[in-house]
Length: 515
Image 1 (cartoon, rainbow, N blue to C red):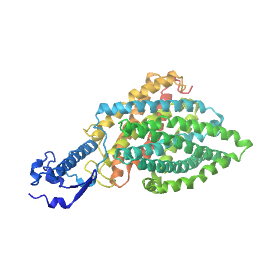
Image 2: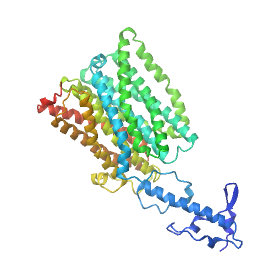
Image 3: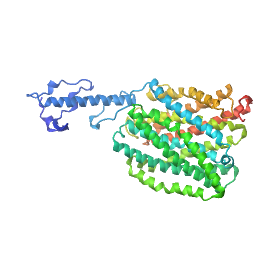
Image 4: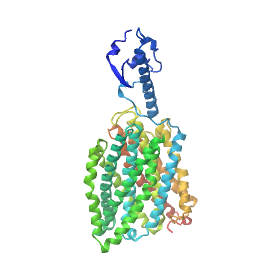
């Protein structure tokens, strides 16, 4: 066998020009055994042996690529991998149920305590004058708290996927991802904040038929300012978390989205309360302040749009990523209307402290699952491609929760976190004497039933929605999480309100629901 045909091509390595031998000459069909170097040695035994060493490295890369695909998709159908793809990005380690639970547990508890703190804040501020006399602010609460799902969690999922598939490995790539994504979420935050205020005005006007222009401008200024500042702060935190988790060898999908929510609810609600209270105080003496605040943040929009358009990674989202964000905001606003109607009734004032908790926990868990499934699909190809692992039909509950698939395993782990997590959070609320509600057994049973049902529905919808979007050439990182977290707000608020109504109807006076 002559080596001359192979020597027509050269390869540059460490400053030396080396002849190339095709990898398929060195590896058997199963790519597990290498042909002996002696089979390719020329008469002088030199030079070509170096090619064999280079080819061994290539064959090793093929085996590593197989491991990557097996680890990412949990599939054995990766035998047709081509070596022309170039180097594959590093993959997270193969995860067991224990490793998934261990990585998710701490961020989950941290996020949960963040929602508990947000609930305690809402329990206090619901008695402020701005919440009493401008009750539409309650409608803003789920919509603005949902921004962490619409924007921050989507950002976390997008950056986690980019980190896992090697798009943030160089400083240049990292800087481009940071600037483009930060500008993008400022555009989205400003627009969504403005639209949320309009929704709050409309939803507040429909039941009562009362409209106040001063209150409408107050809602607009409070919503836009809160959305902008909260997204700026949380976006910077997200970037630091994802970079740090990659350096520590932790899968960002497991930690980024819960940490996005850990401070998200608290920061957003504190900002909304403080800003709306301050602007409400200025309403009578300095009525021009509210329009100026609105105009200032809207005037910054062109700057963020220009920055986001310069980045190819965010340009597409800037043009096509509005539908899920706006629809999700509308869905969350419906949940806000339920909250407004319920909390305004003195019999159900205690519901305020539990709403951010049940909504936040459900949204955090489903965001983790959606981010994991999205990363798993990205390792198999690009959106629009239909790998064997992407079902075309609505999955059965058994396949979602009881199959041997890695995503089914993570769904079981996340579902099992609901009861112990909520017990810890309820005990914390009770210890801090929040919610005006005594934790009786019947209250805990109704609350846990609502929480379990919410997460069960969300995890099933996530399994279907992420694969459905993937098969229709939509990136789930940009489209699925806003819908899922908004549905979590609506389902959680609705089930919690239903639980409080049932408790009141059956006369569970020991729980002191309305006191």
